[in-house]
Amino acid sequence: MNIQKFVVGELQANCYLVSDNLSDQCLIIDPGDEANFISENILRQNLKPRGIIATHGHFDHLLAANELQLAFDIPLFIHPEDEKILNYMTDSAQHWLNREIIEQPPSKIKYLKDGEKLKVMNYELQIIHTPGHSPGGVCLFNKEEQIIFTGDTLFKNGIGRTDFSYGSPQKMKQSLQKIHEKFGGFTAYPGHGDEFIIPG
Image (cartoon, rainbow, N blue to C red; front, side, top):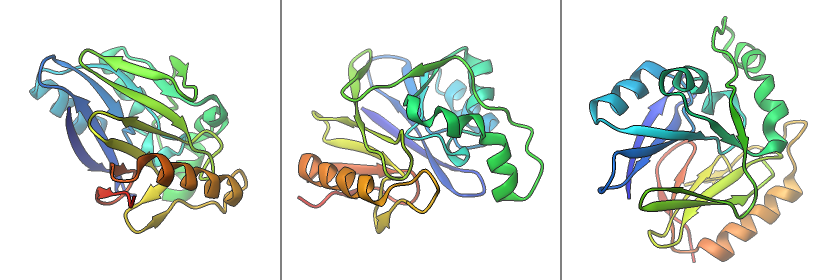
């Protein structure tokens, strides 16, 4: 499995392109901004995106999603409990970035569910629901490669915020416990910052 990380947007979010060595297909995880930059990298490598996966619905992980959908005609996969957050993406971005936002929320949405497997040619990513930072937060893992994309649930030196009106410290605690129990020793690719090994 090939994993490419691009740090995008004013909040320095990690966007990942996931592909393999035996096909030209890829998945885009959390395209937070800079759609042209992401598109250029995809086209330069002759990759064919099969979809966009959102670890959660916050704007700093999805501002480029709609433009990428238009460019490649692909769906957005997101947990249904974060659709409300997604719908307010433009307003949230204008509030936090204090500037006019022209990007619109993505469409052509498909819902993720806990335990679901997204298969692209020779690899698959399995969904694990990890609420706390947001109601519909998810992580994506591959057991064979021992990797997990943790979004804003778990970082190298901390965890995601739970002080939003829809956040839940209790659910975050449960999600973190689940991650540490199931994925100790896995390499984690977070929504911000560097990758790291989850303590066993």
